[in-house]
Length: 160
Image (cartoon, rainbow, N blue to C red; front, side):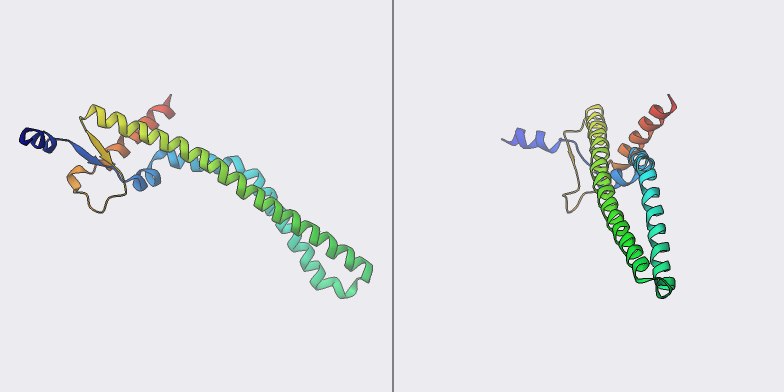
């Protein structure tokens, strides 16, 4: 029994702050840029529709008193239709971004898990803990080493 507890004391434990890795890894920064590029055109279209709607609303406000009731009603109806289209387009875009963001974050989290596992095996760690810890001594925090490894792998992958 005494021998067994002595062996346990020799276990090598590390700690990783996943929030730091996720917020600072070049992989997540690249994923954010990918997300921006993928949805830039749709975002621009929505912005243009919003600008068109604003022009219509300004026209109704400024010139509505000078229009015939029929002209005003038609313009108001066109504005309501465009407003619904913009609202729907925004919701659809938000849903698409959420889904795509989830996919990209999952990919990055899998990459982080792989790098942490490889680092742990290479450096003889028995356990790597993550965020659900109230206290961790700085000597077991390997977050910076993992972040460095992620940066190195990202640079290697992008330079090829």
